[in-house]
Image 1 (tube, protein in one colour):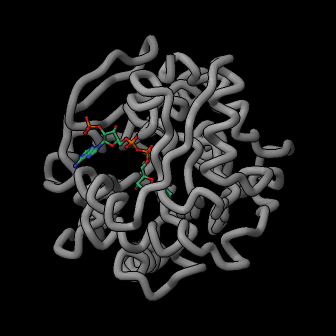
Image 2 (cartoon, rainbow, N blue to C red):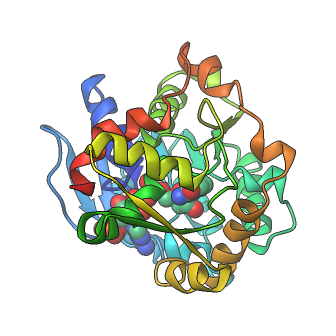
Length: 279
Ligand SMILES: NC(=O)c1ccc[n+]([C@@H]2O[C@H](COP(=O)([O-])OP(=O)(O)OC[C@H]3O[C@@H](n4cnc5c(N)ncnc54)[C@H](OP(=O)(O)O)[C@@H]3O)[C@@H](O)[C@H]2O)c1
């Protein structure tokens, strides 16, 4: 049985589906219940209270570990989740980390994530680490303003990164959970091309068949919107990247293709599958 945390999110949902389709028994974990694919068991747990995850881990062989929101705060102790996995008899953990761990190692949330990666490496468990860059699904933050005002409001309109489709991250995660050959793998995951927020707005407009205006936010405005969902340190670390991506953050990684045998999906593919959110 494989346990998927963050199971109702951008990555967890397609990952849960892919594992169930591959015939695996899946336990999906999140704080709130949600509809699940046939045969998937859902368990409610809050990763901020590691003990609440214990019932989900009983009898499991592998864990997909995704930290969200407050679990990136300085006071969080996510390494307890690795200890719990080891004590529960799990044999492999696939950790959703972040590209910034290698490209901006000094950011406070990167230091914390690196420490979690190290705890996993030293745990004696089998492991793989996924380090994605910016997600295509971050565009969902624009859905309401596109629907109501025909507008994308974002900072740094002309600074792009090669955004990754979370469905590709999910497929790589499934491969790592199912195939021993990925044991010890550290995969940097990007999309196939650099795309700016202004260009993303154009792709959304084309999919909708109606104009979408671009409004550039200041860094302070963007931070105040982000801190509704993530700790201040994570907002700063993210804004540092998207304001001025460095060469390592602009590089198109070969890792999606190395693992999946095909190129990563472009942004317009993600938009085509999610256009309803913008109508
Ligand atoms: N967005 C980016 O550009 C980017 C780049 C690199 C790395 N990342 C990392 O990617 C992760 C986000 O992935 P995503 O987009 O798939 O997530 P998402 O769509 O925001 O979904 C988060 C999932 O985690 C669950 N969750 C949240 N808090 C929880 C808690 N305390 N205990 C248990 N479950 C919890 C949510 O369900 P409930 O709310 O019901 O619990 C949901 O299933 C974060 O770790 C982020 O740092 C993101």
